[in-house]
Length: 91
Image (cartoon, rainbow, N blue to C red; front, side, top):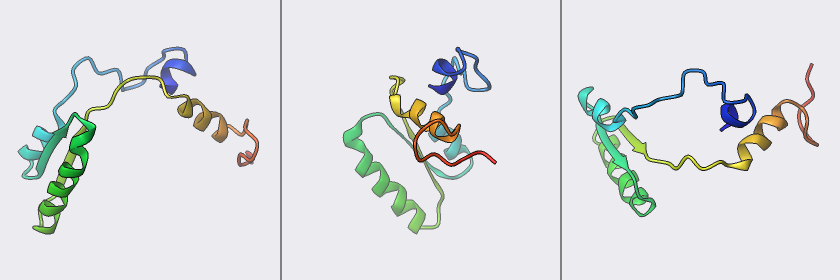
């Protein structure tokens, strides 16, 4: 979002035309992998991942998220540039 709206669509290493299946990649490394596409499935996926962790197996949850613009990201950016009240001052 910041690259689109703050840097005028200048993308650095994040403009993926094909989204990798990180759950399958995790499985290839012997980890538990699960892709979560619906918000109602988050709790179950977290539970399964924790069960795998307790059994000694690393877990990767690949969450599908929307690409809607979030105004908070620009607020975050301007905060750390020191342009918002209460922001840390640059030294």
